[in-house]
Amino acid sequence: MKRTYLALAALAAGGAGLLSGFSPLVQAAGLFEARPVDGDRFAVLARAVGRDDWTLLVLEQIRPQPLCWQSRSDGLVDPSLNRFDFTGICGRYIDSNGYSLRFGDGRQDAEDGSRLRLRLEQVGSELQLQAASPDLAGVVVVGRAAIPARQRDAFVAIRLEPGWALQRRTYGSQTLNHIYFANRASAGDLLTQASSPPGGPRLASGRGLPLLAPPPPPALAPRLAPRQAPIGGATSWRQAPPANPAVNLQALSQETMGGEGRAIALQVIPFQE
Image (tube, rainbow, N blue to C red; front, side):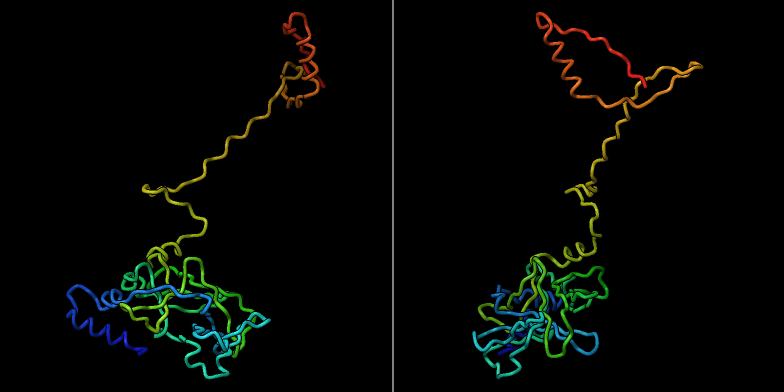
């Protein structure tokens, strides 16, 4: 039953006669659909292998008890399903036969998406679940995890990035034993976004021109006041002292108190040192 969809795919491909101009990947992508799953019933985990390698697996809690995995106080995950017969209780997806990538409506799988593969890469103290290919520029980060420790018998839980979710493969009304790491965006869009430099200029819609911030206004030159010319007739300049608001208000009140409300001209005494 687990491989029923393979037989169905082969039958459909044979019945279609491998239509000219369409690759088997395109036909296979059109055969399958996907539906959402309850993410709380799944765990995306990384298992340490050897000195510095990691492998990916997905666990599913089919029945409520016993628990297939448990979080530990040190931040790692205990695969408790290894201590009992988990048949019919836990689902386990351990390689590309059990999980794969899905982009957009699924047809992108036969384009850029067909060349992308899931891999685990350690970047410093962070573990990244990536969708990448040797012949394509850019790496799409599907999930991340801090590495609290590296133990052979305990797993690291991967948290999916925004926009990513688990889905189950379906064929018609049949639910298949295969899990998708799915994103509504196309593989090409995600690769373009991943290849763009962080903080680079955004493109104006429909124009292809960068939206740059307006230049800052020019700095205002300090207000200068002439000072008395020194001997020799040369005029020197100095920065005018800041205005005193209290003095200005006092002068204004004296002006408005003059007869008939007329403004009274005040004598201006130039400032001197």
